Image (cartoon, rainbow, N blue to C red):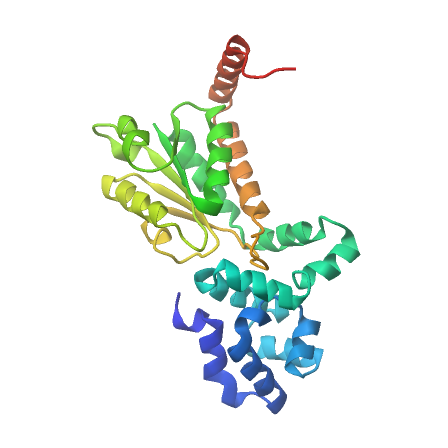
Length: 291
């Protein structure tokens, strides 16, 4: 992360040029940023002892596109350093996960998820998604990596991608799960897809290093555009994930995985149909499903 991308550094550097009320808000955020990140603009203003308009002007003065931009910047700080205990306590202080209480009343049970999808949509580069699909479509072998909170994304992607193309491998670590899959040469003909979100699992980085050293092109799906894995990747897809509580809103990342898989299928329709037919024949013959 560049220095001026750190919201706390930005606040510190510009504090003296702010109005008295904005300085009061700045001091509150600097001292309570873990709690501030989980508030809506109205509640943050009340907690800091300023007006709602001061919060909006403060965000704009710092160069953000209104309060949502400021809140996203605070979330990026939390993604790097906050632990689950901090999140649990901060969410409790915010009153039933801060903005979710109000959103739930406004639009029902799924409103927070809907809002999260709308927000994430603005951050996703469709050209990068298409480039990722093209790489995965033509690769000889595809290795899919994801641990901890990203494990389900890797499982999801492995299952559906393997139904439309061959040689898709879910990598769950070193040893017997990886060694039999390794080719003797031609690594650049393969591709690896890595799902990784803060806090970044060490195994994800270790495998990214391994594939990078072997010359395997990497696709990284993450919420932090600049991290140790994206530095090794040919393609990086940023997904704006909101970290409001100790339970992350991962739905946008799931949809990105779905979008990539669909684009892979459309790029090679004949191969996809043939593989789907083989899948159906296999599941029928082995009684994988039941009525």
